[in-house]
Length: 270
Ligand code: HXC
Image 1: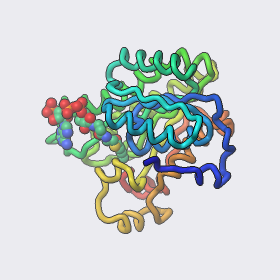
Image 2: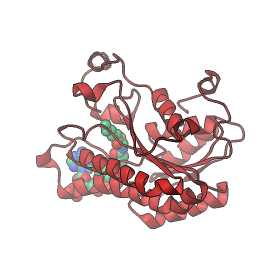
Image 3: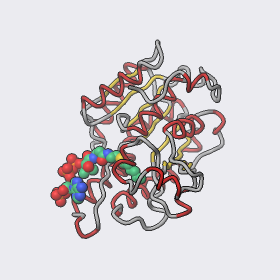
Image 4: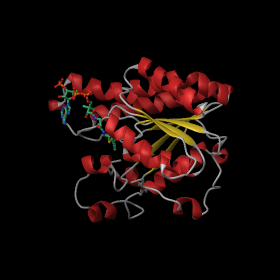
């Protein structure tokens, strides 16, 4: 089942044809965060390519997202590991062949687990950095010609873990700090080509794999410690994504949009 539905469009925050004719290329699109980001774009007119490692999950996500708009074209590109730039190039070529172009890129493929430093092997650290950071670089590398041609925009899915010392998340914090640095440098280098690069940093978002994996305590206990007194929703992530890709953000690049209800300011896990 998709997370969003027609009520996302009918609430009227965004024009229903805002992204008509645009194509988004998404890594990690089978995970909750990237899937809802893509759902919002497709509901507002875009077509999409969903890239993932697992065939079953990637096919299912693409099918769910396609069901949101009668004329939506959403293709599944499974068995792709973002650690391998050549497999991403193949995915980009297939996207252009089937959907005609790429305007937006969501680099969201990520790996995570909780581990203290003592039990985190060098290979485990390397695996997460390779998926989150090298994978983000590879994604943009593969999409670059399309982004240049279409004066496109990038959203990296980051986190708030590296703003302070979060235990058991050394690998992810280090990787996401790198992702922010990558985005900033790309914003400066690619800005003159008309390409924008930003990060979206979700905090505690309800009904996500990240929260299930990392949460401590009940949802009520978590909400009580968040300045805005609630967990985030997937719709909060959808709205932030739509904003960053919309013309309303045409002067916004090299930025990190934190969507966490103020959590990291009070030291809550992001
Ligand atoms: C300690 C672990 C571990 C664990 C794996 N490893 N799980 N170490 N605790 N729980 C170690 C392994 O022992 C191995 O090290 C190394 O990591 C690589 O493991 P593999 O299974 O061989 O790697 P690979 O198949 O490449 O898998 C990558 C992965 C895996 C990141 C380890 O978890 C994965 O594929 N995850 C993808 C899905 C995912 O994590 N989604 C979460 C998204 S949520 P040794 O030394 O034994 O060789 C998210 C939200 C973040 O990212 C939110 C932040 C707030």
